[in-house]
Image (cartoon, rainbow, N blue to C red; front, side, top):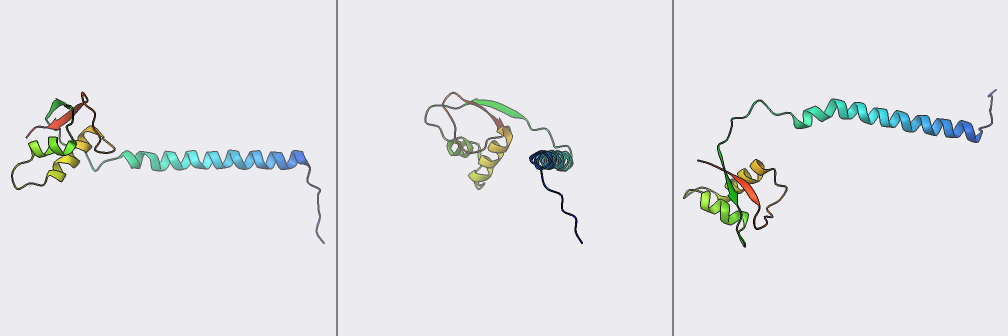
Length: 104
């Protein structure tokens, strides 16, 4: 034999609210556990000597990286280094923008 209790609108709303609160708390706990690891590095990095460079009109990241790259080295590696150093999401540059360039 089963017992059936009618569901009131208030009871349904309370369960929905409780479920949402539990979901938010679960997400916050997951962010607290995983978040710091997302920004952690393997250890302290070596400081890099940099120069500040002002981008000229019509200059591309390729042009700037090619000027820094020694013969026989890959320009793409220099581009990646510059992007990483400046936390650039892509290769877009604007005239007058100041970026950091590694000093060799």
